[in-house]
Image 1 (tube, rainbow, N blue to C red):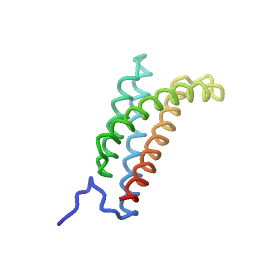
Image 2: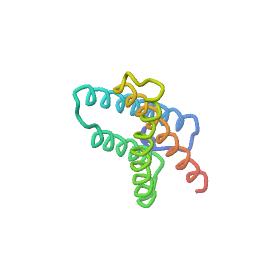
Image 3: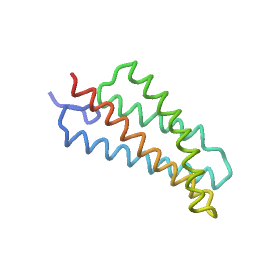
Image 4: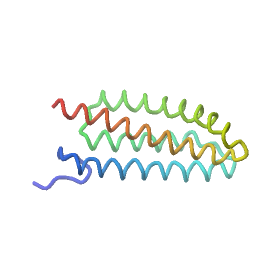
Length: 130
């Protein structure tokens, strides 16, 4: 039986490649959306939330996550993403105060990478227990 590209087969190297590609791709998409919306003076909160949820759903589905894992990780990721993103942007603005758009883009990249890899480590640990 051929395994799906979007499901883990327990092989660490393959899992790591998938997560690496997925998290970096979503960080790039998050950054692009953040830059474009901020450039045109539009709020990016809803779009970044939807993208974060899509990344979390993709990772949870890949590791055969259950409904309770989905609900808890989704809620925590959205809340953490919002809080870390706004506070991270405030912190980065102390270093580069003259570029408010780039401040939010950098914070978005960092938070997306952080959330993606934390979800991976949480789900990977749960997969080992099975």
